[in-house]
Image 1 (cartoon, rainbow, N blue to C red):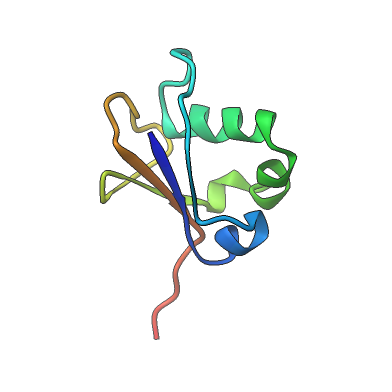
Image 2 (cartoon, one colour):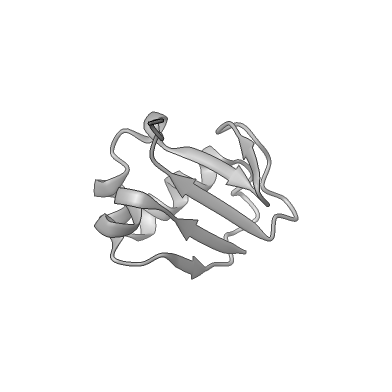
Length: 83
């Protein structure tokens, strides 16, 4: 599975993507973010308030309870503003 990072999240992590193989216990976007935080202190710090982080699975916006099974990509990004 490929994880894509956007905007200030990408800047704080100093990477725009990574390829991961989460364990079977990681079933939702929330589980994924918790697992990423447990294995990566930079991710934990950048996403302290995970409720603010938006997610998309295979280009479809989802909430944190969405299942990630069979996902090719999960994109994580901060709230967007219009203008």
